[in-house]
Amino acid sequence: MNANGLTDPFGRRIEYVRVSVTDRCDLRCFYCMPRGFRDFEEPADWLTFDEIERVMAAFARLGTQRIRLTGGEPLVRKDLPVLARRLAALPGVNDISMSTNATRLARSANELVAAGVRRINVSLDSLKPEVFKQITGGKLEKVLDGLMAAKAAGFEPIKINMVMLGGINDDEVEDIVEFCLEHGFTLRFIETMPMGETGRKAIGSYVDLQTVKARLERRYELLPGVMPGGGPARYVQVAGSSLRIGFITPISQHFCATCNRVRLSVDGTIYTCLGNEHKLELRPRLRAGCSDADIEDAIREAIALKPERHEFKENPDKIIRFMSMTGG
Image (cartoon, rainbow, N blue to C red; front, side, top):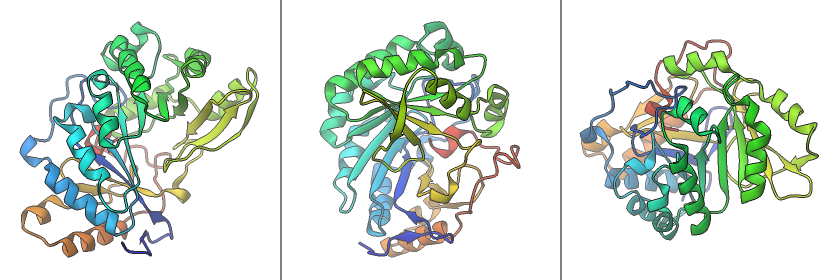
């Protein structure tokens, strides 16, 4: 392993890669993907498991320690536990996690834990079946079944991600806190981002999470909190409990100065920032027969492109790709 690791032009060490295994999803959250969207990558253009393992082995040799499996919905990809097991075995990788909507989690939770996935983030934007259907087009019952299966399988921690949407689910803040207190889950509130046309439409429902935090402080005693992991949330802890509540605030209080991550999309593109178009396409090089050293050089080349910060506030129309195309 390279002891010096990967460092971007602004001195940030990159040790976390979010790997999208598919751009497809069985839900249609309106802030992420249009309901009628069908313009997915063809499976022939997806990186194979062998290719993903090869790229992530190169990242690991350069100092990457954390890998998160994402999508779309990662459990749409057949045999995902097989890939998880292969990535967990890479020298230098000490953390395999997954982001999921949990609709398919009930059938695969135990297998994922056995493969080495220890932590999961679950999208849950409402505890009301009718509101959940309005936001996602899906059934809340499937997600709750998946969450309970994950709890029984021993994932730790289980983080609930709730995108705050004004006039839609912002009346459920206290309900989701109580739900997480009951089940021992961690909770993260997320601000909407102008990713593609759908994201820009959702900005009309934008909620500044500073107001949510102030609201919670009127009901609960909140103490400074910390949480292991490589993500951007700022945490507090509810006094007298183990519940940690995180706030992911790309708009009201950006976290670019501490960004330690890049994304590998399903088609093998390295995206260095959600809010910029800086990228490097690896798939053509992989399929042209590049060496492992060539992959490492390409990764260094990509990291050198990483911008200082996003421009969601200054230039909200800049990003035309959907979140599912980039990788969650």
